[in-house]
Image 1: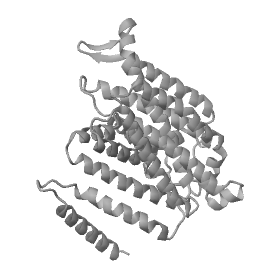
Image 2 (image 1 turned 90 degrees about the vertical axis):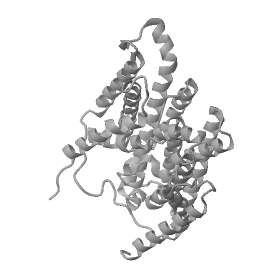
Image 3 (image 1 turned 120 degrees about the vertical axis):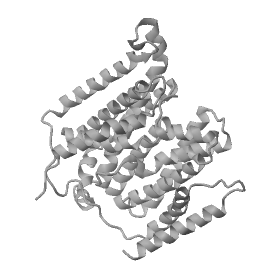
Image 4 (image 1 turned 30 degrees about the vertical axis):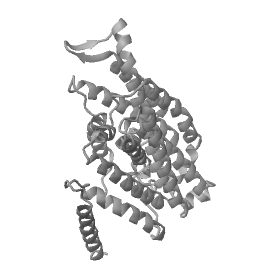
Length: 389
């Protein structure tokens, strides 16, 4: 394998680069070789997937030190809710203008709330959705490094958006949302169809999602490389911007948040048991295949809806579950609630900073989500992970 793998990789990259050059237009324009590699490798991985030997991932609860447990988890959750509420109020009333920092009041607050409030609502809902999806994926797969992007539905939304924009560069928001929803649905159906043959085993889910994500990302990257009007819309979507959030977006996201996350709280027992492995879960009466299917569908819907309104900010889905676990939320129900509040808080603060940091210019909210959450996660991991040996 050590000899064959580098040779196969070299041949694939050489072949892809040659095909990209042959497909170049008369003006010399061509798609990036990296995107071409994904366009070639994605279908190849999907074809190989049913033929791969299955294996079992290490489980979250299989070894190592016992996770830290908060003595009063629901009190901490109330504090996180209060903190998220305070952050939302600050983001609504505090801002910068030509004369510097100011606190909006009266008629000015009413005028500003018309465009600030939808952004806050979309950011909070998307952060909570991605965090909930991250908790589900990490527990179902038993892989603490899994995030919502491995399902492929987020990039599927981008591929659907790309298809709509290629048909009409002036497509309105309704058509863009419809295209994103259809792309997510197609990616979800394809991923589930590939994983069904292994009874939705963790390894098949991850590989199928990664293959779909690579394939859809390649289509998006190839379109962006064209440098046309569609490219700027896709770049704004990829950056995780909430700048064009409307009251309709906020209402849709907030209205879907409760009905999509309620089944996860009701299935908290499954989320507690599935990380122990298929055999243990089956012995404890959990319908492993059906439970995984239901949980993955809900996580995919959450990821798709968040991607439709803010873009593929899957980093929030990776970091929020870890932060919640490091705070002391070990049981599934409190872990889910804590991660959702932390995800919402992270996105609210990131959106506010994206507006304030370089005023009057606006930076991507996704950039600040990574800048805020990344170093803090590294600090908590360095402080909280016990040394072995």
